[in-house]
Amino acid sequence: MVSSDFKSFCQRFIRGDNWHNLDVKRKNLGYGWFHYGMICSARPKRVLCIGSKWGFVPAVCAMACVDCGDGSVDFVDASYDAQNDGPQAWGGAGNWSKIDVKKYFAPWEKKINLHVMTTKEFCQRDSHIFDYIYIDGDHSYEGVKSDFLLLWPKLSEGGFILFHDINSKYEGVHYGTGIFWQKLKAWLGNNIELPGDFGVGIIQKKADFRSAIIYELIKLFW
Ligand SMILES: C[S@@+](CC[C@H](N)C(=O)[O-])C[C@H]1O[C@@H](n2cnc3c(N)ncnc32)[C@H](O)[C@@H]1O
Image (cartoon, rainbow, N blue to C red):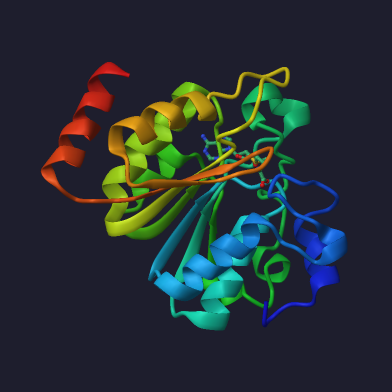
């Protein structure tokens, strides 16, 4: 973590929440180290993050791009607010439509572009290919499936797609990420899982005939 002081980083991007296997007292950023390490070692040119309450993963990714790579981060969040939008906010704070993104993500502001819109709207407007795609937005089964179907074609060959919350249990709203992940990893393979109460599932894309057929089958039958 070359370009940040740990305390101010936690105050801005974590704020007492812990969805990422953190141990703040021991200065352990949990899954954050994984994203940082992946970006510093795989050096993706374009990173895409879908959904975040306080910006933890987008900030870690932008920091890694500054410290170790020459990539940049697109961060998409519909800025839903749990108080006004209810369960579809998936715990969102509605802050992204209100903040000054350049100030909020400083000193990595040059490496991050915020898009306040849904994944679907973003995919209708943006034609880039990404090398590292992190999904943490709509956690319903249909929502995660829709994000996967929209984003898999935008993932480069050899690129990584990651799903947060593969271990989440029912908590008043129905998390579908785990069910979707169990099916996806069985069909596509080539995956690893990070343990913990929340969990992260990672698949590296093989742009082969088999994966293309599986993608079409998921679109048709799941
Ligand atoms: C609060 S996060 C989940 C918590 C998360 N684990 C974290 O690290 O902050 C979920 C975010 O996804 C956003 N979201 C929900 N559905 C979305 C969609 N269809 N497209 C884009 N963003 C979405 C919400 O606005 C919210 O900010």
